[in-house]
Length: 417
Ligand code: EPZ
Image 1 (tube, rainbow, N blue to C red):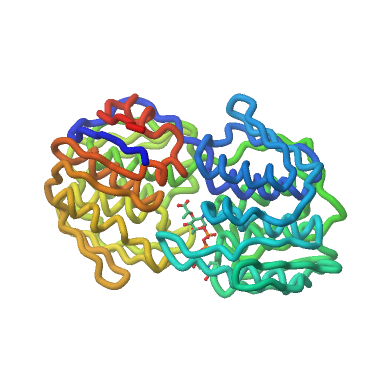
Image 2 (image 1 turned 90 degrees about the vertical axis):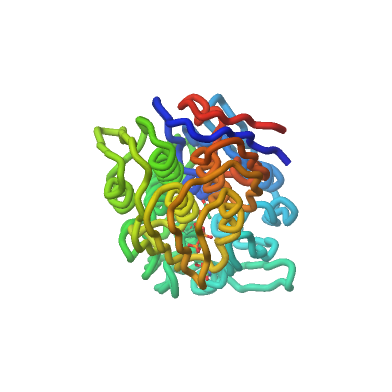
């Protein structure tokens, strides 16, 4: 177990290069299987989830190698469609391999994904989509198998705009016969990114980003594509909330402010000054955060659930009242008890998290999930005195070199293995 040793109280100054999106890279890696060729993901984030998915894909027969900051995938010789259960237990996103494997090989076997620290994480919407495309399901309470004599386009209405299910069904439908219409689908920018990647490989998909996606099945997709994912809007939001909390002046580089309007509005209505110029966001924070009032998490384009813990941590370090209602995941509150160790005045009531801002003091805390872990880093950076944040491996799943990037801004943070 690695840990961060952090001495809080420093304002942050300088430039921060935002990584490419974890949640694009993972789904594009999986979808590359459809091309039967080679794909390069430019500036792929070097994070634990990408490393774990690379291992899972190598066990399927793919060649996955880093070339500097680029990730080269050669999926010509996939020789099994049985997804390794041990490794996929560590990575919910391994589920995104199912659609592409089913589409290319008409058969796939994977471990029934368990719940995780943020919720039960069912996969019924994925399963229903594959069945609507003509796949037959088998297996037991450990593993799920799908096979299909052929995959045929269908009209599929999702009961909830699930990001993963939208992406899995899109990828599977790309090689199906005929047209698939996915209604009530997720509108996240990472879904648009996947559409753009698949179309660059020869797919014919339109509508991503709206509530209806149309996929016109094609014979095959081709490799030889180099694709750079969009910026990581959750890392960008995490940093904005960090600087709002610690104070300072930071330039976030390599971003597209257009796709995070809802977040920028919340932040710029607080006590800091936010300006946007081309692919940069400047944040100037010279006083403590005020309360955010009522915030509700919801599917894009509303406030993202993946910034819920970070916003709460920021609110705890400021003044005033915040009540956040979490509507996406049923159990994403483990970080709250840890925030209380900093002296935060925060409590959970059903799916509401209520905060009365105040002063925070150094503490020893334990991360149990990725975004909750980032919230604890924000708490520690804003607290007076020394803190220890255990469970850094959770945080490294989604943030590459976080301690080095924060240290370069003046944070006193050390990684202890
Ligand atoms: C993706 O997870 C992201 N992960 C999550 O980011 C993100 O929080 C989530 O979308 C919501 O935006 C990746 O892209 C790798 P969902 P996903 O399916 O696809 C329910 C992070 O920190 N649901 O949109 O698993 C589900 O239980 C991670 O980067 C069903 O009921 O999320 C949840 O309540 C965390 N049945 C809601 O939908 C299903 O078949 C949203 O889940 C699927 C989902």
